[in-house]
Image (cartoon, rainbow, N blue to C red; front, side, top):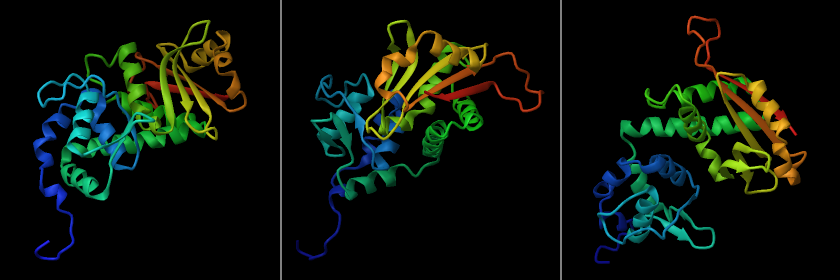
Amino acid sequence: MRTGVIDNYWNETETYEALQQYVDWNFDGLKEDIVILMDGGRVAVDITGYQNDMTTFHSKDDILTMFIHLGYLGYDRDTKEVFIPNQEVLQVFKSSTKSRDWTMTFNALKNSRNLLEATLNCDEETVAALIEAAHDRVGNTTYHSEAGLSYAIQLAYYAAQDEYTIIPELDTGKGYADLAFIPKNADKPALLIELKYDKNAETAIAQIHRQKYPDRLSHYKGNLILVGINYDKEIKNDQPMFKHHSCKIERA
């Protein structure tokens, strides 16, 4: 007010570095959420479990709720989503994510968007390759396991949460589809993803049809994509076109 200089001063009243430790804990993929928010997206959050202190944190929802209290995030109570409220706050996030530690997170989100686009285009080879890259991020102790594969798939499709509600183990009445993607906008197709371990992608698609999983999403008939993904543990890396993962995609 004394100088008459108009500038952004809010971000100098609190340092984001003081909060960086909470982000670095990376509860449940918190870093990926931060990148989505920086890109103008929104992230669903449950604010009911927060203890309203700076010491008790059990999940990424607690961290995001704290950011709401401190003014770093806005909250839409109708959709129960958080967002970055203005350019001043966005600049704080940008300044705090320039380190090399964030490069992998930004690249992972870019690959995730490419994966969703390839899936919607029914590009089986690209989907298999990007799933392979995402699975490589899983720790060595869980890599060769169904749990590791499931985690890798959910991580790989992380960016889809902007446009889809992702439901693991969707009850179809005759079994459980591994992953269902329900579009938030009617112009997008729904996705059903079935995972297989040491079998083949065709088997996954066959199970989707045999168990009549699409019946659960009958109102998306004609706008539904079926995805079968298989992980082959035994394939040798000296084989031509070496790749652990294969993919089969159909429209229904």
